[in-house]
Length: 185
Image 1 (cartoon, rainbow, N blue to C red):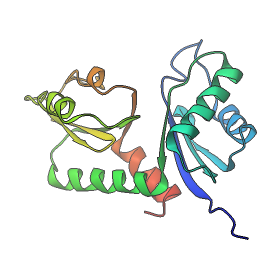
Image 2 (cartoon, one colour):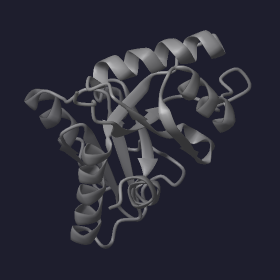
Image 3 (cartoon, helix red, strand yellow):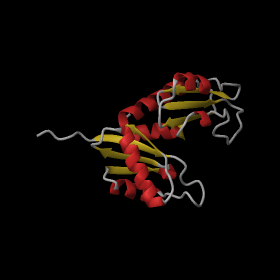
Image 4 (cartoon, rainbow, N blue to C red):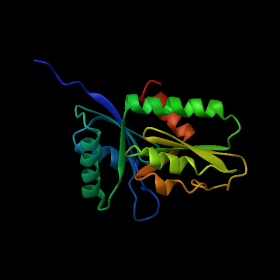
């Protein structure tokens, strides 16, 4: 009898720990993910980064299971974006390549997307380029490459986030750290 293979996944929770009403400490996140039936659960910093293992193969199904569990535990919606470790490793590689190709950027944000954009949506997002920076979309990731002098403290100075659908962002350092820690990259 053949056993189903376990796959490593990374989940990124959107809009948590942004005020008094959307609090979701990483210890509670870990507990809820374990209670939902996932194994090998780890969290990284308190911004909604979770690593776990599952025999489930459907990313969409995993997202639904987690979102339902988070809602039951917290009482508010927690949009969740899931990548396999292999998919995330590719995002980290893109992040490295873009950083190497643009050595003078001041900030590099990576928007992790729930769904791939259509070619028209990609064109709209990438058309946001101006003197403050540019957006580069690849698969389910959109990279905000911000030039020196962009509005300091602004995560979305190009106003592209509203075009991305359900997404959450992390800076390039977090992407690299998670890939090294959880994806053997």
